[in-house]
Length: 108
Image 1 (cartoon, rainbow, N blue to C red):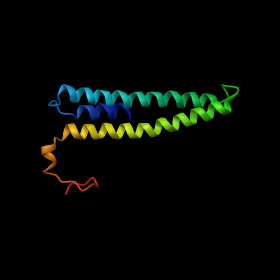
Image 2: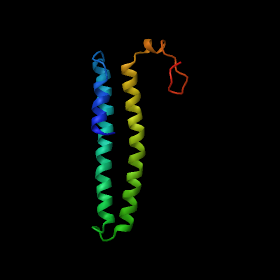
Image 3: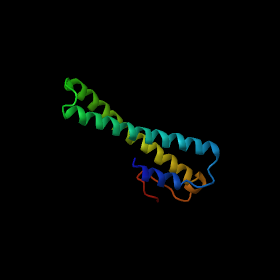
Image 4: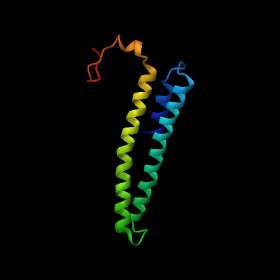
């Protein structure tokens, strides 16, 4: 997730979130940002290997490509967890009764 979007999500959490909720949010944010940083590093390393900067590049390039693929998949999952947590913290359960959802993301 782009750092600006990450900041927007965190800023949308109300001040009423307690210390435990804030700690959980911080853990999710750090995981998402750490994954993004790792993706950038691995992508850069892969590009360098594919440019011929590493002589025995075949196996190394494949290893990096697999690592990048895994990280990109994990990033989507971690970002989804973060968005769900922010939604949970921003919309307390008592408000959910007012807006029933039927699994399609659209309130009734």
